[in-house]
Figure 1 (tube, rainbow over the protein chains, first blue to last red):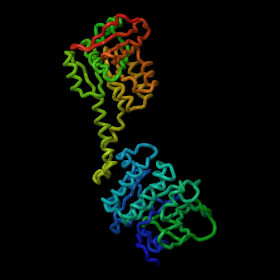
Figure 2 (cartoon, rainbow over the protein chains, first blue to last red):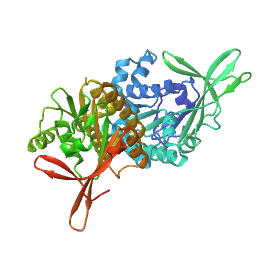
Figure 3 (cartoon, chains in turn purple, yellow):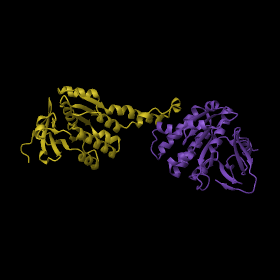
Figure 4 (tube, one colour):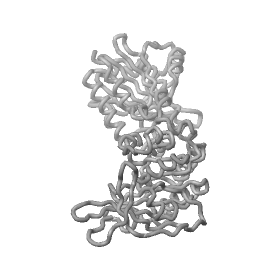
Length: 247
Length: 249
């Protein structure tokens, strides 16, 4: 165990074990994978466990209306929807875009600054400790250039880290993507990468998880099988042999 | 009813009876030339049976009525204030956006749904077309001014709305007058509007060595090139008057 940095337990026991106690506090972690690999579920569970421990969560929804998301959310045995609504703030970013007049397809540097300021303001005012942005890829789409994406992620994660916030950035990966993110920049500037994938084995499609990178802690880089259950996400080591990995 | 009066006797004479029913007129002029005043005089010159609407985009409704009162013109017209409508729906939103961008969204506003959304979808051109489509013949439409619409909407959208208004006017045998400030637009807009309308008037306040010379022209009259001409105009306590330029031709 390295105790140099304070840990934020994800609440997913096996993942906390892989990370030697949890995500180092203040880290910005890319949760990356293709559709249906469990990115949103993992991120919500991270917020739910935070809320249970008294840490306010902020879920910034970019692509899906948070109301719809709440409806479809699996019913955890250990946490009710009412408690989720109390401990986690759900914000639809299109609402914020509208309020800030950001209706152009491509954001300016000024837009980026103002967007960061407003996210930081929410975090401060509600004393948020865990943030999820789902997805960062959709924001990157409106930033367009690598410079702007880098600027946005670096400045946002720095500001949130200074406030003691641990952040998950959900990244959508197309099967054609090289590396761990759509634009390549996201993975370079984040403190950690958790890769979710699909694995076909003996006719079954299994979900997999691997911690590729995590600053501030040693960690296993093994691949685990991820199971979504009513008691939360379960991870078991992937037994070697057979099967083909898909991103 | 085959012709309607412009409200200016000499102009009616020059047009050889006024404006034919079903015609759409463009009045363009430089700022300060008096096109707004012409628009008011024209709207108040309607016959009792003419359903008349005056669509203003820049003035307060009271100011329109007061100005008409000062010249002793009839004020029994309907005034539709699109400018105020626009202010309520769009500018208020713009002001709030600039406040939010400068100071951040207040905490109590963050979780509240965006209040301007429904209004935003209300298209100002649709509002214009709707008001006009409600008119029953005979009618008289005045739009002061087109500048406003070109300022907030795509040129092609405005032009297609004008085409619609023109068709409605033509088919229902009404008359329509649009004002437009010259020199503000790319020539494609100017010529786009000029192509749609049947009659074009221009008003120019030209500076001379001794003062101003006010020139009124009938620049276009569909199928009647003989009615085109240049005149002098002036402001009197009863409104705009027009006289022939003796020595020209």
